Length: 502
Image 1 (spheres, rainbow, N blue to C red):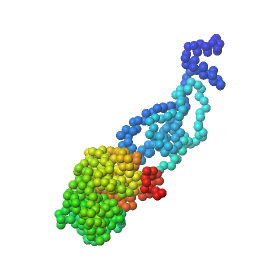
Image 2 (tube, one colour; image 1 turned 180 degrees about the vertical axis):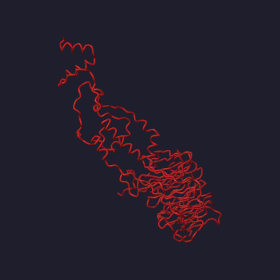
Image 3 (tube, rainbow, N blue to C red; image 1 turned 45 degrees about the horizontal axis):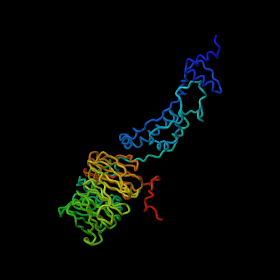
Image 4 (cartoon, rainbow, N blue to C red; image 1 turned 30 degrees about the horizontal axis):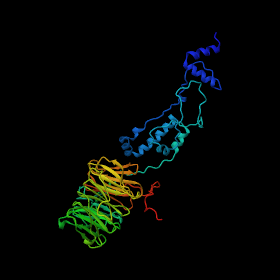
């Protein structure tokens, strides 16, 4: 027969695969005898290499909306995805947090370049430091991944802890009829009257009102009449309440009326202490800055007045809106006033000019929902009406727009949490829901439903933990939505000059 050297030369000349195989065998320090050219296909030795996987589809609006709708499910899916990568791709991920920070990358980078088939005898399996006699079906890295601590998910009750019946609560988008004071007293405008209800005792009464009184209702409990305080009654003047607002100390409440004047009341004495004229149409928005009261009206004017001095001496008129002013909010440092109108405009004013210092025109509908962030200096959030449906964020330090999220329904109110970078929004057409958002990721923390009409009114409790919402279904609902503990990961802006004392 032929000699081995002759057979080798023949095979090299006829087969390219054999030529490469014999070249590798000759260069190897430990020669291996092979009788056939069959690749190693042992199931437990297959090494698959996935390189340059395109992740662009994960940034689609549908994916982002799905992640916002189910934040907890997304976190579980991330952990499961990491577990599969460890077991199938050998990614060696041992911390979900680390993997989450890398999700924004557009491609996976392979750890090593491997071949699907190996044209050589199988070598001893590398266990990467794992015990071959482990009883766990997953690798050591996956075991560490499953044992890694995960942040406890905050549970938000989908059921209101209290419900108040509020007869004659108007279903009008441009009014602001509910406010919660720092003394834990709720003021509600119902028809031509303003009623006060104490959240501390659930009943504070001077005059019993058997028919017009609020009816205290708790879930799964029977109805029982409660006594409240009637602060004022405008029916002799054939007038109605269009807005209410507490001052910062919680001892004075301002009441806007349909006829255009504003009354200021001392709650402790149950007495009117001032009457402010100047508007020619209804006053739907009020905002306090110490003793200065700002009022916005359907006559398109914003009037600022010091309630301690005579009216003509302290009056300051701001002209800018072309239609009704329906939203007013002072910044936490009391330096800037934000106003929204039915002309789809959002203006920012300072205390030294009668002209707006900033103007934002991106909204496509009326801007009633306005909220300044207490955590990020100069951050302003605003929401548009039915034709807009968006919550937009603005950097008033630079005058630049920031993020925007489409909520899918009319934005009626916005309020920031006092203790964490979260905010709540209430909505009208067409979903009548309450949404809790995480900022800046804008992930949806919770969705609360229960109102059958537009959720037009919103107020935050003095402790920052609960909210009260009002709707045209003539009910007030109390929800626990925010955590009372301050977030440990709260980001403090270095541009905030008021955060620290030097």
